[in-house]
Image (cartoon, rainbow, N blue to C red; front, side, top):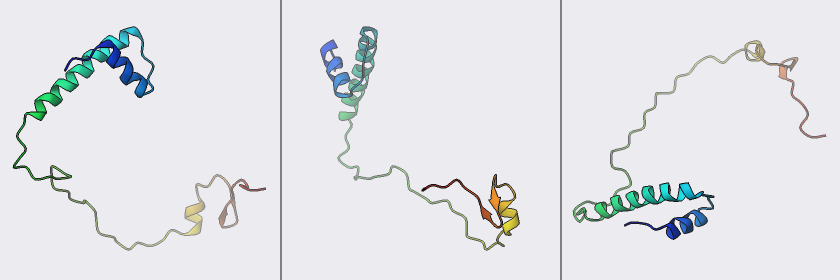
Length: 95
């Protein structure tokens, strides 16, 4: 399906995209190619293909939780830019 200049300008307006005259011709070619590819895909027989959300099986890759010792307050605060005792010192958020 070949798009014309007016159709490209209409699509650009719907997408709220500003286009120049050079852009219109470039986009006309690209969008026309995309639509032609969809026309080819429409011809593929998918009657025996069950609907699916994923084309490949999903598998979560996780590692087992392992208990570990907690850090000491001094280790946690070692790289703090500002600290007060055993606490982080931050700028006041509310007055």
